[in-house]
Structure formats: structure tokens, C-alpha cells
Amino acid sequence: MFDTTKYFPRSVDSEHPSLSEPSGSSSQDHPVTYDMVHNLEGRSPDQSAIEMASEADDATSAPQLMIIFEEGDINSALHFLIESAQNPFASNAVAVVLVEEKIREEIVERILPKLHPLSKIVAEHPSYLTALEKCETSNLNVIRACTTEVAPPLASPTFVCECTHDVLGSYPTGVVTFHTFRNNQEAIAICRRESLAFASVSIWNETLTGCYDLVVALSSSYFFLNCANVDVSPVSSQLKAQKNYVAIENGFHFEALRIYDNFKCIVFPIGGLILPRIEDRKRIEEEHQAISFLEA
Image (cartoon, rainbow, N blue to C red; front, side):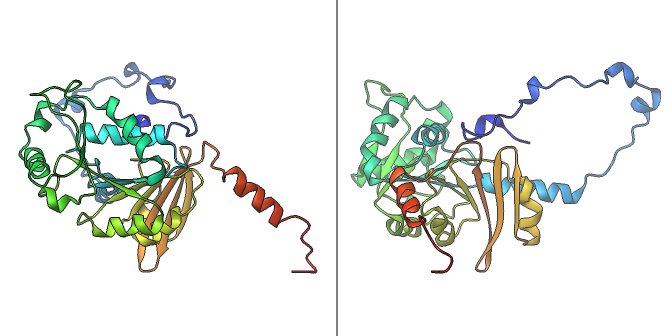
């Protein structure tokens, strides 16, 4: 079920199905018989398996929120963000992105060269055209490719700055709203102003500082830390049963966790080292030097 192209690039290397060794059995080991052709016996689908698969898909079947911190892996975050901007009507597309103020200029500079003409289906979609019209009439600030790069009648992926989707029309609007924040409190306030209900949140901060604060504060059920669009089936049954649970599978750490009255799924990669900043490590080391148990 895992699509290895969707995962955090620094995760533990896993063997792609196309590279696996062929199984010992071949078609010759299972000859086709008369009954196999003329007297087929079908089995009714396993309803519990269908329900589990459906719940696992919930994390990627509705609008996604992305939050990028200065300490995040910008390369990986932009990979998923640009992919969503080019395919804004996809079921797991990023609808809203929040960027820490310190890296806003860098993010914009790196986005622009990667914007390519939208497909005809997207460019001519009524919701996308309505959103563009709202941008023009409301004089909203937008980020899109220069006309020298994507000249009319071709259309560019569009980011609308400091705006909520309800201003642009009914979701999906075909554009991504782009916000700037300075701290977690501002990020939470921006998210609460948005009318969309996010199925999942992708948070990019390799130190993990404040990530769990966002998990607690935001109402989404699925949180991907330093990754995106990961299959959550390893904990889907526990989420359904509302049981606290931890699993490590395919290079990812999965948690099913009760937070107040809600159960949430938290996923992050364990293949790459996620370390605190150098100054934070020094402070931690100083605080833990020569501690006597008698003084505790």
C-alpha cells in the first residue's frame, strides 16, 4: 500500500516492489483448470478490511494544511507544496500553507522558478476561474509565475497571500492560500480563521519544537511531522477502537493518541536524525552536568 514516491526523502531505504526478487512459484505451478474458467467461485469482500482501508484513506481525502518552520526541511516541503499547486483539485492537495516569517522571502524565491503551466483541466475549471476573478476584484496579493515564464493563455499555479478560502469561493478553489506566522500562537490563530476542515496537517520542523503544541491545538485527526501523505494503516484499527498505540513500520513512527476527547494519529520518519539545534543541545548538556541524586 505504500507509495515510496510520497515519503520523506530521508526515511529508511525500503525495497521498491519492482526490485524485489521474483517468488519461487510461477504460472506453471498453478495450471488453469476447467472449473477455474467455467465454474468460478467468488468470495464476498471482507467488510472489515474495506472499512479499515477507507479509514486509512481519510488522512489524504480532503484539504491538507502545511506548516513550514525555519528549522524544517524546505526541499522536501516544497516538493509536496509544488505538487499540490500544480494539481490543486487532487484529493490530498495542500489547500493552505503557513510559512515562518524568517524564511518567507526564501520560500517565495524558490517557489517561482518551479511553477509550470497548469493542465487545461485545471486552468479552465470554473472554481479556479472564479478564484482568479475574486483575486482581481478584491486586489489580493498573489504569488504566481511571471508572464515571461507562463504566458497567456497558459495559466500559472496561484498562491493567494493572507486570505481564507471562503473569500475565494467554494472549496476546492484551485489555488493555495499562503500565510506568514512568527510563532505557534499566530499559526494557530490563522488556522482557526480558516473555514476549511483539514483532514491532515503536514508540519515541517526537524527539531520537533512546538509540533505537539500544534497537534493539541488544531482539530485535525492526522498529523505528519516532516513527511506527508503516509499510509496510516499500521494504526488504523487502533484509531477506530480508540486505543493508545505506538508502532514503527517502514521507517516511520506511528502514534494513535487520545488528546482530550479526540483520538489523533501522529506520524514522523525515523530514518534521519531529528536533533535539537546546536545551541539547544549545549544548553541541555549544561543543565544536566554534575547532577547529584542527593540534591534532587
